[in-house]
Image 1 (spheres, one colour):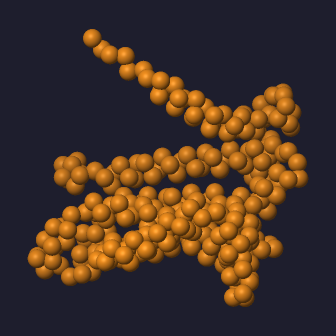
Image 2 (tube, one colour; image 1 turned 180 degrees about the vertical axis):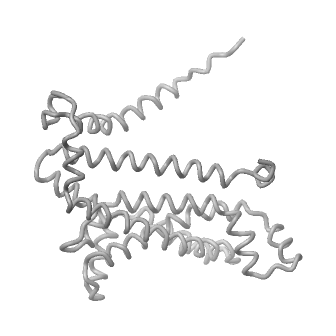
Image 3 (cartoon, helix red, strand yellow; image 1 turned 135 degrees about the vertical axis):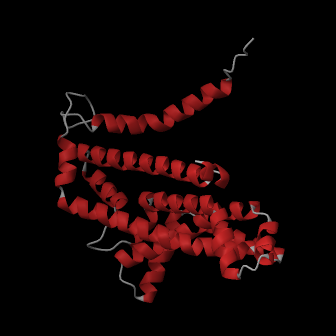
Length: 268
C-alpha cells in the first residue's frame, strides 16, 4: 500500500510561502486596476504599464541600474573567483580562518553601516558621488558573496585531479583554465547571479553613495513611494519581480546544463 506522504511540515511550508508571496501578488493584482487606487478593483487596464514605458527619466534609471548590476557582477565575479582560489590554497589554518571571518563579516554587516562607511571613504578620497561611487560600492559588497559561492566547489574538488594534470605536463595556467575553472563553473555562475540580484535589489548602500543626477531603481521607487501611492510603482515593481524570476529560471537551466556529466553531453 502506498503510504500517505502528507506531513505537517508541508502545511507549514505552504503557510510560509503564502505569507511571503501574498503581498507581492496583491501588489501585482492592483497594478492592473483602472481605479487608480489599491482599495477597490474597478477594472482591468494596462495604463500604468504604459506610464512606465513612457517615462524617459525612469527608462534611463532602469538602464543605469542594469549597467551597474552587470558591470559590478562581472568584476566582482572575477575578483571573487581568484580570491576564493587564493583562500582555498592557503596552507596555514590561522590566516585562512582570518580571511574567511573577514569575508563573512562583510556579508552579515548591516547595509546602513556599509553605506555610511563608503560615503565617508568617497568623501575623504574626493570621489564624486554618482556612477563611479555606486559601481565601486556594489563591487565591494558583491565580492564576499562570490567567494562564499565558489569556495564549496573548490573544497569538493579532489587534489588528485590537479596532480594528474601536472603529471601530464600541464602548466600552472593550464591547470587553472582547463581543470580548476571548468570544475567550479557552477559556483562561478551561482556567484555571478547572486551578485547580480543583490546589485539590482540593493537600496541602503546605494542610497548613501548615489549623487545628484544619478539614481537606481530601488532609490527611485523609494522616492516615488514617499510622494504617495501610485499604481505606476506597482507596475514597475511587477516588471522587476518578473525579471527576477527569469533570472532565477535562467540560472537554474545554466546550472543544470553545466552540472551535466561530460560523457552524457558527448553521447547527446
